[in-house]
Length: 145
Image (cartoon, rainbow, N blue to C red; front, side):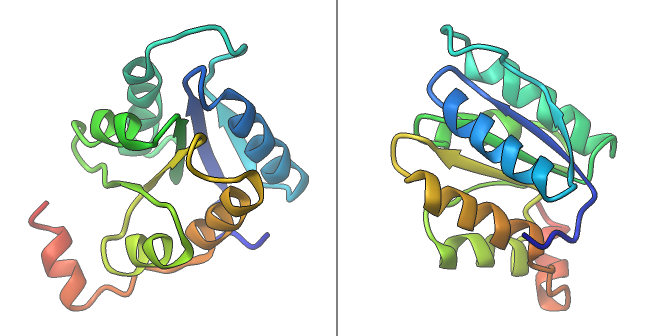
């Protein structure tokens, strides 16, 4: 795995816990610093609480990027996008993931553990962390967000 970013915030809800742990282990093996913001078990939790933790870390630049995992990815993205400077994208395939970075400069990847197989999720994390923002006409647009 090749990453343009050195420090990643990571969190999930109970539905995304297992996939979060898989992603954390993969990133750690690749020597990418991961700040795991929870939860620590798969007991039921409220996803907005964990989206908020990652969004705060990314918006304050404590970490370069964030990854959130819940059942669909949607709830996490909606919650994270309430914060200034956050552009969280729900991604389900290679194209949506690449475009979220090249055109939208997404800084949080939201994944759906119930909709994305583990192998595909690792592939999407790799694409997300290794894709540069194109800037140019896209910069003008992302500044309007």
